[in-house]
Length: 126
Length: 126
Image (cartoon, rainbow over all chains, first blue to last red):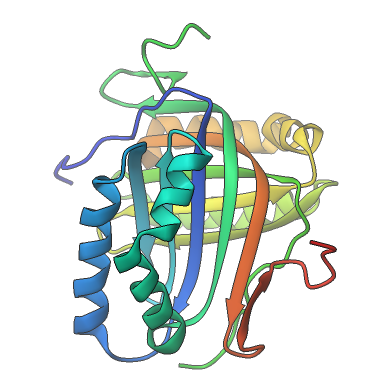
């Protein structure tokens, strides 16, 4: 498989927003357009550190976004375009979702390219 | 789409272990067998609260497991059969993975079945 991504390497402590959801049927084009726009918008918020996302064939998806601190999480939550998308999500796109705000205390990355289990931030003092 | 799952409703604070990975090619049967066994084993660890998982067609997956406290996370990490699986994962199954241990401070659930955005634990005093 072609290597087109790498694990995110961050430096704890930082915050994770864990968004799990089940898509409703349909409206796929508008959903995909908005999802792509949200990635773009989130990346422009000061304190955004990165995100990881997967959705399986049964419609269950998990997106985890990472943030420097709670102020950054709050700024993203309150972004006006994001708020409109949240409303559309509840009305049209999701059967259910859960949102969890969590403080990351420790992390590790394994990567065949560096052949070892290391703290996620390579310059970590841990 | 048939409703065959519901969002996990938990009561903060609790811990999340965020496992993101890219599968290597092949060895799918052994991988699936071990993954199913790990779900079974984790569920038997005292303090296990639940898990959510999604893997997309490109091989990137995210599994988030939830735990009562750090002692429960540690007990799961050190389970002997889980340790063997961790080694096999590094040797055979994953191109890379990241593991983040995070304390969940707040959560919310939206569900069309109860038509509202509520704290994830319905009996939450918050």
